[in-house]
Amino acid sequence: MKTLAILVGGGPAPGINAVIAAASIEARNHGLRVLGCYDGFRWLLEGDAQHVVELGINDVSRIHFDGGSILRTSRANPTRTRDGVARVADTLHRLEVDHLITIGGDDTAFAASRLAPATPGLTVAHVPKTIDNDLPLPSDIVTFGFTTACNLGKDLVHNLMQDAATMERWYFVTVMGRHAGHLALGIGGSAAATLTLIAEEFRDSPISLDRVADVLEGAIIKRRVQGREHGVAILSEGLAEKIDPATFGEVERDAYGNVRLTELELGRLLKERVTASLHARGVEVTIVAKELGYELRCAPPGAHDIQYCRSLGYWATRFLLEGGSNAMVTIQAGRLVPIPFGLMMDARTGKIRVRYVDVESEMYQTLAAYMIRLKAEDFDDPHTLAVLAKAGNLGETEFAKRFGPLVGR
Image (cartoon, rainbow, N blue to C red; front, side, top):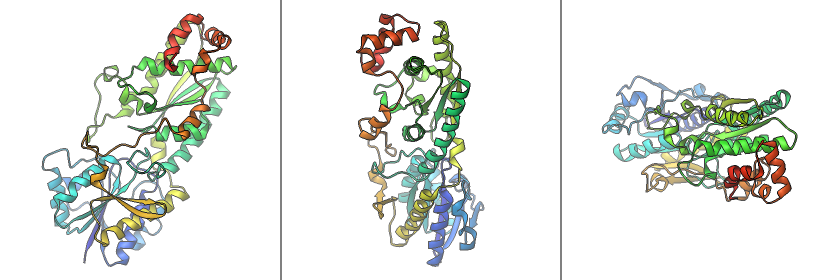
């Protein structure tokens, strides 16, 4: 009897259980034994073959409705040490695993790409999972979990917008997205937040914390001109990776070497900078910093993600059974399109390529047009400039010198 193993790496995302269910059912229908590996690569890396569970059809037939992962997940990294991949391969060999499905983001995909060629006889398929939506897929193909996370995030931000209006305050909401701003933009755009800031709009790196703070301060001033003392600014977590590291001092990293961005408290730092700057000029404002991300990851998947994930799981198994290997499984225009691991690599970094937001696209420009923030035309009209300067308790020349460079003026 052939054996299929399934594991989940990285952070949770809505739809994981639907992938596990569909992959397991299809494998069992073809006479395979199915093993679920708990906690990603963690126990396999330690040579522990006990932390697995055999999955039958009755065990998984209704789990597609549930958030989270019945196999749990971890960020254990077999590529971190010289013999890590070999230890995982040996444990899989002792479990008599013939096929492996990994479910995860860029780090898990990278580990899977190293495991496949190091394990003779093992075929490997990766299913792209991340609410960050930053894996190298065609621009119109989302990673699973993204749609559900955007929908729930939109509702949460709408509630904050209501609170902001009621209490006349601002919220700075940092949204998950290590490298790319897809999730922040998806939530901010669908909720019609006051503005959304993503790392991709800042072309230079590193950028100063003060520059990001000035964008936010300019938006607050522009809202004051409109007679509103409240708003919600969405901040992409990836901004922290572009800001000068010296701003944060010593930082904590995960097993893949990634900075633990939630520990940097980007929203709090920006809140303090903006509040201090405005108060120094006698402009009173209340700002509350919030983090948004953990609330989204284990939500029950919506209808789109359930159907999408069941298709991904089914075709991941079929891809392996039909002799495929060493690829990420995608569904494009309703058809299976495996993307070989080699085509996913960034030649410069040696890691999986990141899909960034295209700030030149019509989609982004539409969302940007609805944001309340300083724009180039605000500095071209003398009357508008005078009104903005007065709302910020600055002289016109001083206002233009301080905020003009943000929009190329």
